[in-house]
Image 1 (cartoon, rainbow, N blue to C red):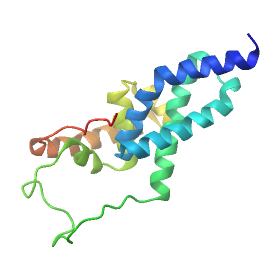
Image 2: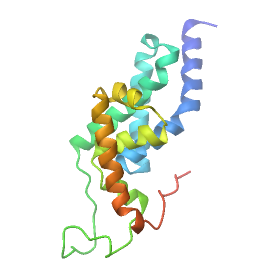
Image 3: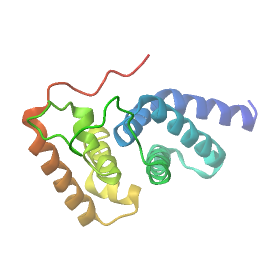
Image 4: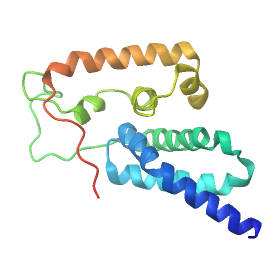
Length: 168
């Protein structure tokens, strides 16, 4: 087997094993399955380009970092807008006006807090791992996690559904 064939096989195996989890993480940050798929694909293309410079034990962490950075960069470039049929009288409906689902509640969090929540609780990473991955201090991870959980707890009684099912 040539070096190129081995590289292709390693990357394909890695992609098959880890792309669904990376896509879920991307979804929690951007809140759109199709966009999460696109950003995960872009991240995988970048990973493929750097494949020979990566080491097997750190590839997943490197891939997560690329995915989260792609998501956060996308959100900085393009503020998400939602088209509505009628303009509401108020800028934001209160919790008693309509029930919130988990996806909408996560939307109340700033992008970096969503990324931290996804990495800490979906990907089950430690504070140290998240700090290294996002290149921020441990204390920042802890404080952003606490703020995010505070926001989620405030809206928890209003949750009536979970994250929409992943399209097949």
